[in-house]
Length: 435
Image 1 (cartoon, rainbow, N blue to C red):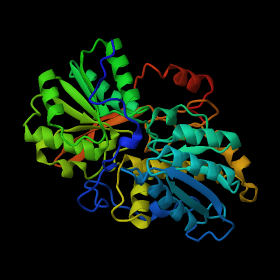
Image 2 (image 1 turned 60 degrees about the horizontal axis):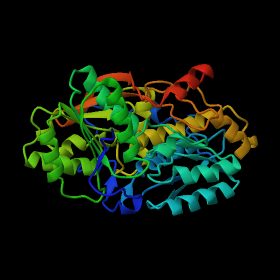
Image 3 (image 1 turned 90 degrees about the vertical axis):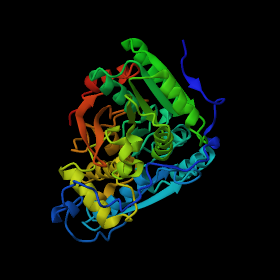
């Protein structure tokens, strides 16, 4: 039985008129409580020569949703910051990266136009750090025509993970939601369960379907699987639904600003109770605990990549690069990490090649050949490879707010998805997890 409840009729993304972003910090996002201090080596990007690249530029592009009601620009912003650092350190064997970002403004028609333009420009060798909220399906059509490939920073809709020429670095909202559910299941706190998402095609419905399938198979009582109008601003009726359903735990699969509004409504009604509240990785921002306040101490969030306070080569370099090359108000969140990592994967794939031979064909071959890519930002190796679907990141971490800041609650765990069997089989049969 379909237990997905929709507060309104099914909506297209054109109805998404409230401003959504990974998070809108209230204080300097560069000040990450508990993070190690940067060292000089953290700004030795790529070749690490300390000398500016002056050769012929290597052109790279991205399509991201940065306006129209959604701002996912933290992914290409961090990719740009990393490319700037690489260019100050010898570029890709002497050639700087020239990066262009197109804003699709939450309009799939514009996504298609941008993708077609980049595809038609043969001087653009790859797409890196993309983060479109609406357009992976239409973009993939254009990329596939000309063998152009995207190392996407942030995939959101289902199509981002079921495309031949797009491979996201992040885990995506469905995996992130299932990670939270399965964490509570391991703690004996998942039954009964409640889920909240956006009533958007190819996104909210896809996530809700995954939750319903998993709870059916696991024998968990799903007492709410609510998809709300993205333009909704009154969350008191939703809070009433939650309290009446009395779940043991719940997950909110919404961007951070909407989640913060839901939490504010719940606090207004003092509705936290004994429920274990959580959010997907969209809420994993260094400033989110500060934003939602003391009432939500103990709030749980999934993290698709390492915690922003993690101590590791890539984690430390991401923070240092953001501090040096990004705007002070640029978010320090999972999506920023994903854009940085997408750019780093791209650079690392090209550095072994002869810089004089780099064109779309040689770069596409290098991108498709990425396998077993390891980073301390990831729980498991990342890969590309040739396939009609790409979902390499399906192991995540959990974090909890303590004293206003996120700390690790649980380390890396594989996330089970009833629809991932073919991808897991392919990883093993093609040896994609090893170089």
